[in-house]
Amino acid sequence: MSRTVIDLDDEALEAAARELGTSTKRDTINTALREVTARYRRLRALDEARELVAEGALDIDLLLDKSAYRPTSAGVADDDRDTGAHE
Image (tube, rainbow, N blue to C red):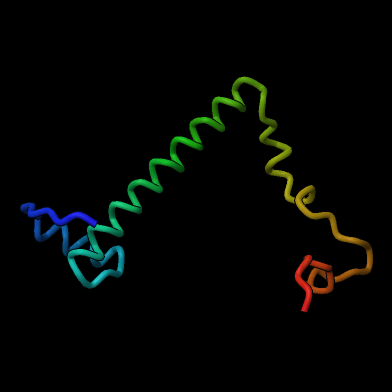
């Protein structure tokens, strides 16, 4: 981890800390950097998915059909299905 001396907008830092639930400047800045990076990655992925839909390479209706995610067997409750995890 590097150490850098910078001037910060104290009001913006306090507002970010409240939103992020952080208590130190270090945690606030590091969390904000991670959040921004993750947000832009999600936005890029969304743009790429939109392009695939526009090109016909991705069927959005199929993705939105929740019944196709995990078909359940007749008479088996969701909690009783084998999830692959064994006790």
